[in-house]
Length: 119
Image (cartoon, rainbow, N blue to C red; front, side, top):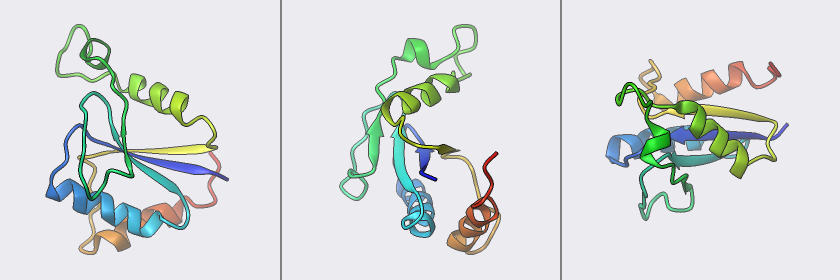
């Protein structure tokens, strides 16, 4: 079973790097992982090998009636187009939090719970 984790964010800052690294640490030997930027070009020397810029236009990125609403299906479709050799995908947006003092333990608990789940 080949699995890709997509950490979705249009920005990079220290908090997001910490969050991404905690996910990376517990999944690096089990899953592939990318730092997925939908519509902004991101670069960071610490994460460049993980960053994938989807280059979605703002016209297709935001809902035409509500500029605060993102058309997430365009992100998913773009990821599927670029990485279509995976069996399963995790899409984790940058505002998702693990309610655990130890972030790595929390992420490990989440991914371990679903490790044999094929739904």
